Length: 129
Image (cartoon, rainbow, N blue to C red; front, side, top):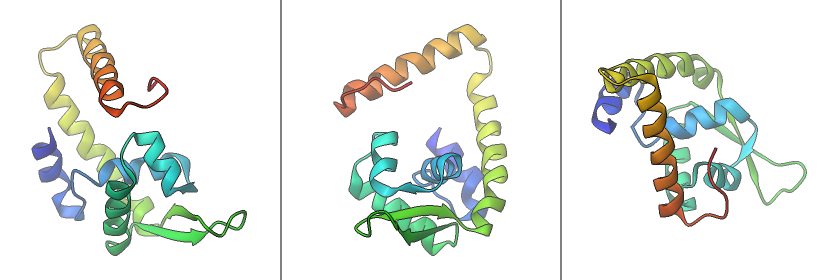
């Protein structure tokens, strides 16, 4: 799937490792990098690298958190907001390919099982929803 996603997102200079951060910021901006790592169950170093790449591409900007200047809040730029629907369409095309020949019930079960595997691998305190 990552290969397909990379190919779909190549025109936007977004790697398969960055789109998840872009979409998470879009759904709950502003968000701190720490909260993003926790939400996605991804280590802080990987998060920092992905955010830096999205910043270089002009999709994300950081602002000092007025409540606590030790942290930065992440926001989408205008370019980021414009690319989100294109990324959603690309992900939809990949999802359609992965669902081919699988009933809705089996696909939902697959996603549920993968969440359990992710939880087990992450050793986090809470089960992802």
